[in-house]
Picture 1 (cartoon, each protein chain N blue to C red):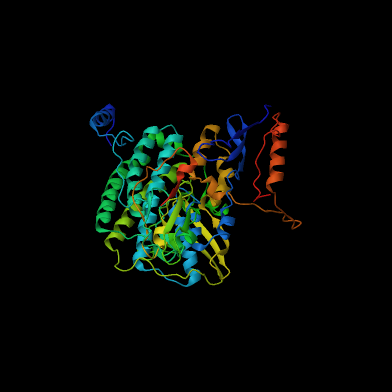
Picture 2 (spheres, rainbow over the protein chains, first blue to last red):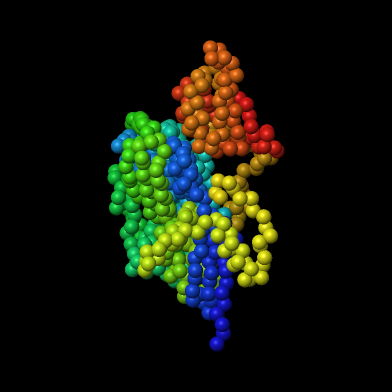
Length: 408
Length: 119
């Protein structure tokens, strides 16, 4: 009997432009085992937050993710506002909602392009990224930057929506809606796309619950899990939201959920613009935040985003914990990959819309039997990596690394 | 959706005459929204030296110095563009409107020294 073949995919460019290593064991062309290895891009941002004030932290938190930057800063702001006992104005809540939905548009259009690229349908990449550019332009006009918009502040938003901007957003919403109708038609009727995406990366309804999948991954398995519906925040208590679900429970289902969600977002943006309340956009919040701890959940384009913030009564947080949506979706990845062909691996990984560096946190290994805990520091990690390569015939011990005195 | 070769012919012909979706840059003109965050401007006459901008800057890119005396202030803002993340929190933090921004993003330089600007 032929021996199983082990293929490491990554850590350089494993289907997407971020580092992670997938060790795939093959039997013929079929994946029999998969090990997901993240942790190549740990940035220590939670620790960095503790050394800075709440206002400075806003901009660190915004840089957790390049795609869902607004939702991370919204979550953090909500957490701090909750601790300070401040309620933001309705206008500010509506502007945050408009921004969040525009962000969802750009995130889903970006994903659609990447999915097209992964399956060799580059025309779709060109089309959807062309449309995404319109959304980015309007995000830049509203927020001030293309990616890290910086529109949120603790106590509200930093920028108001002008009548000209409302017209611009409406125009973009119309164009995106019109073009998205074509993508929906494409996703639902194009036989090659359905044949390529259907039946791969299966995660059934029960498995989605078991692995704690979130966002479009769980909604594609008929789990109506949407924080905008189940635990409304910002203006979602007034804006009509429909959680889009699908019963395919595979990559095709995830595609359908995302393209249909674009339509829902357009509807929500229109509703917010029609019903935008008058009033101030910012409420004053003291610099020193009262003692306490809070956990806030929001719905990022990729799924549920959770932030835990603990304050000790100073102007700096005591602890900040960020649970990005991709972190929840990694747990089911092994299950999704197993049983599929090697050629399907890139699109299955891309289908959860992963964000590698968003999920990289310090890990404490906990032995359930003995209760022992262990943490690996940088020096021992380097020794581990040198040995790892030595076994494979490569000596990397000669490479000099300038150690930062801050770490050692 | 139309079926058959007619579908692709129509689409191909449409794209022959369509305007490009991309813009020509740097050969062409760059159109940026007036609200886009770029170059930071400083009005020394308005600055009272409270240093709220220094305190709030997430990138520690700003320093404020008084080159004059206590009575006759001559404030100077030193900005490190290599550190600046263009969040414009300093503009929001300034109570005296001494700091402002303009949508100018062409600020690249060839050395790190060029990035430190005294305003």
